[in-house]
Amino acid sequence: MEPCDLSAVAARRLIGAKKLSPVELLESCLARIAAVNGALNAFVALDVERAPKTAREAEARQMRGDPLGPLHGLPIGIKDLEATEGLRTTWGSRLYKDHVPAADEPHILNIRAAGGIVLGKTNTPEFGAGSNTVNDVYGATGNPFDPEKTCGGSSGGSAVALAAGMVPLATGTDYGGSIRTPAGFCGVVGFRPSPGFVPYMARASGFTPLHVLGPLARTVEDAHLLLKAEAGLDKRDPYSSADAARLPDRLVAADLSSLRAAFSADLGCAPIDNAIRDVFIRKVASFRSAFRTAENRNPDLGPALDVFEILRGLYCVGEHGTRLEKHRHLLGRNVIDGTERGLKYTVADVAWAQVEQTKIYQRFNALFDGVDVLICPATAISPFPHALLFIDEINGQKLPTYMSWYTIAYALSLAVPAIAVLPCGRDHRGMPFGIQVVGPNGSDDRVLGIALALEQVLARDPETTRPIPDLAKLSGSAGGTAGTKTKPGR
Image 1 (cartoon, rainbow, N blue to C red):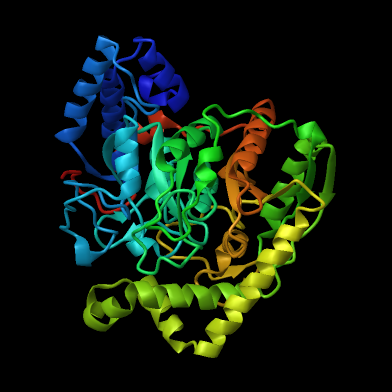
Image 2 (cartoon, rainbow, N blue to C red):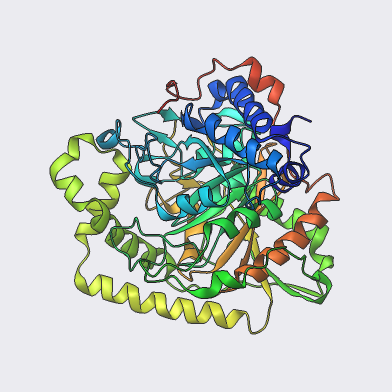
């Protein structure tokens, strides 16, 4: 095993024991990037000056026996929606194709303070719009299990980098599934925390609880490690709270045999491919006996589709309304479509959606009076060719919008829950399949403990263990057609 393939927790333990140098780990990650990134286009900018210098400084502190932070010496991939000081940050938009921020976002500062090494930026669709990682600055990011297929979005570059062993940890953001869909499509772990768990000050409207920051990793323990470093209390985010302080330093697996689980193939409202439904039912049959009780039960999400469309439209107008007015010719299809949809809604529409979201939140929380955890698919379809910007039909039925195919993720966002995505083997086409492990708002530590225990159960069955891409094949096709290749740089 190469150092870059180690879990973050294992690598950090070796660094603490002086058995692995941060320089050695960084060089291993850079070698893997050189071998496979040409086929995948996951990393789009590398900090070729600061990262090696930081690794050497980390090695010096390690050898002196200085106190080391929880992320000491670990290379981190940063999603290209998150500003990094001195390192090109484009938001996947031609408007910012040459932008180099003067300062880090607060959670990036937290990562650096914990000893993490910012290695580079991972690809994302323009401003995170849509769930296919394609943009006009860097092109498409390919799925590590088939580079011609989508990796999902908008944290697609981060998920691909993890699956291919380019870094042990990576950051993400999630509004309607932007951590969860890529995690499901690429066979890695993703965690959508409760709003404010990781302070988020970059939103144009701070009073938008649907949009959160969170970690991606290859294991639940690794996701917990990064989340612990990112999280904190910062009242510049109106949703920030002291909940993050409850997150334990060491994650303990829950006792699944004491828990009541609800299973839902479609949440009662999401279109889902019939084959994926069958895959979910078959996978669940292999582990549902691990719980004290297991029942098939849908949450009551009411008019979730209409509510999300309106609230997302409101969000798009706030984020992109001025851009649409002044720079329409530089914007991509998804940003334009989402913003124009938002401009058509009335104040009455928005008021109705906010009232209905409140009802959804209350009904969803009431579900957990009778169960301890909800489990459903992470995605409704198998990965499709990234040449298609989105899927417009499922089971032969036309979908109303370009977002409809990932209703299985965004419908849950309305209840602002805590959600972990776990790899759960492969689907009917041999591509990664993932499940969402869901708890109510504020249950982040509990959801992570349940996810850790379930991860251990899934790992014991070849049909549900985390799939691994063919790295030799990816290395041999480094000149493939995953997208527009650009030389990573500052």
